[in-house]
Amino acid sequence: MRQRRPIIGIVTQTQAAVPGQSPSAWVMGQRYVRALTLSGAVPWIIPLVPDEPETLRAIYEQLDGLFLTGGVDVDPSAYGEPRRQVCGSSDPARDATELMLLSWTLADHKPVFGVCRGVQIINVVCGGTLYQDLQAELPGAIKHDYFPSAADPRRDRIVHAAQVEEDSRLGRILGSREVAVNSMHHQGIRELGRRLKPTAFAPDGLIEGVESVNGHFLIGVQWHPEELVDHDAAMRRLFEAFVEAAADAASYFSPTQ
Image 1 (cartoon, rainbow, N blue to C red):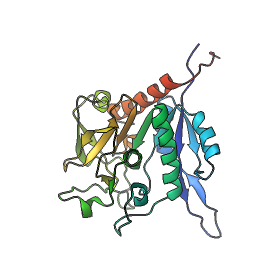
Image 2 (spheres, one colour):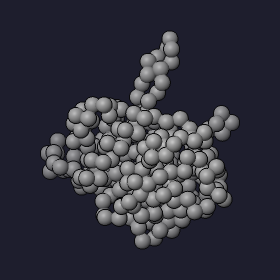
Image 3 (cartoon, rainbow, N blue to C red):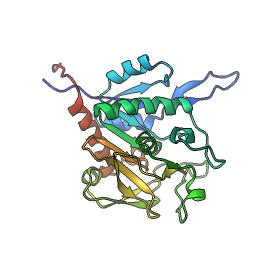
Image 4 (tube, rainbow, N blue to C red):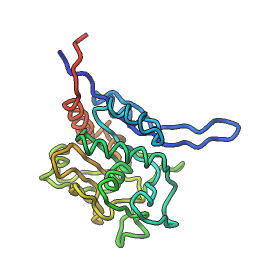
């Protein structure tokens, strides 16, 4: 008998219609999917159907873990604040879908791993808040928004170090008190949510990593490890540890073929 490959849910994002060319669509970047499959997972791409909770629940019941990717800004209404001009575009259907799925995973203790926007939505579902723009709202903030451009399309550019709490699940996985990371975000955690503890910090003090306080495999990082797995063993271990936790949580076994 061997344990089946764990099924990991990946929530999509809305792509607007292009008049005369294509209808609206739900999309997701390939790097996230490949990082998970290389670690032994079976990815399940999840549509944005928060208005169909029975459908979403049926999908959820098949999952062994939930992966939360980067993307557009979390809408400030999700954490009870008005939108400021510095806030970027958002995807309310994605917010609602992720918040619904996260509420179920928190109740059931299914493994969760979030990157960039993912760590932010984890914080929000736990009652925390976000900086809508770090440069505008965090005094002394370093540059975090190294977004790809035509002049420099790299997504694996290392731009700063993150200090990691040694006595944390994240620290044990990474095996280091300091890691070099990429950075493609302009928002970040302001008030930390309940049931979370900070596990990594940027040079300006911004929280760059969180995890659950109760032993639940719930980890979020602000950088993009999926872009670093090809040449950084520590980043590969993040995905491997998550997939292993999801495999342990799998509810049944399949016979060896």
